[in-house]
Amino acid sequence: MEEKDLVQRGNTLQVKFGVTNYNTPFTTKASQEYIISGSAVFQVKVIAAQVNNGHTNIYNNLVFLKFVKLRPDDELTYTIKFSSNEFGITNKTFISDDGTWHLVHDNKKQQYTFDVAIYMDIVPSASSFATLHGDMELTDFELRGEDGSVHMHRAVLAASSPVLRRMLGGTWRETTEGHVDVPGTSKFTLQHLKDYVYLHTLPETGLEQLLLLASYYMMPDLEQKCVDKLVNSLTAQNACDLLEFAAKHKVTRLLLAILECVQSGAVKVNEMRDHFLRGE
Image (cartoon, rainbow, N blue to C red; front, side, top):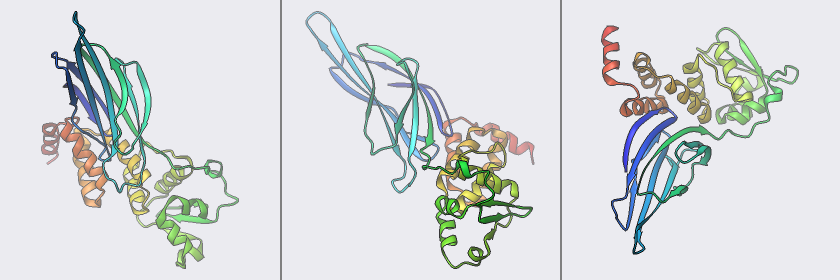
């Protein structure tokens, strides 16, 4: 099975495969394991068989995919939307599982090519908080930044972060005073946090600071979504800065995702080097 035209960036992957059965009675061919955004593994496998009925060769091919989490202790659940123009499949959803091979296509060709495109996402936690996003009457807690605060509901905060849950359920000073100070964080970033908690939306800018909050408050779903969005806009110009940011703040998810982009060739090392040298 020949791989070509691989394009991998963050939580997306596109690749083409060419398959030829050289009159082998039975064979199994598998692609490499593609690591998606440092969190999950995607792989394609083809089982090919050939028999002769006395007059002609008959070929039977089965195409499978596998999608599993990279780390067994990862508490998130991931999905992919799988598409293939050759197979006539558009956005078929698969959920990360225990490594089951899923049949996606069969044909009777001796030689064929097929394309694969996937988009990985996180299964969001069930939330009915959207109707409370604009509520001010029932809010009973504040997150205070350097230049202002946002009002939220204790129950919503507790459901969104184990760190905040322990804080709100204990005897901390912040619990009795009805607010918590978040040093070094702007009201702008706190509003983005609120928007995600209530609405599952992400901003177009300020993702780095939101990522730090997600890491601090142990919100892995938000952390992964920030990483995916940052890496999807990765260029040679910003890769060095993001690598430095990830290393400085020990954001492992972002660091691994950037390195995978570089390794796959989505961002060229020589272009990063040239940009770095021009900035000296």
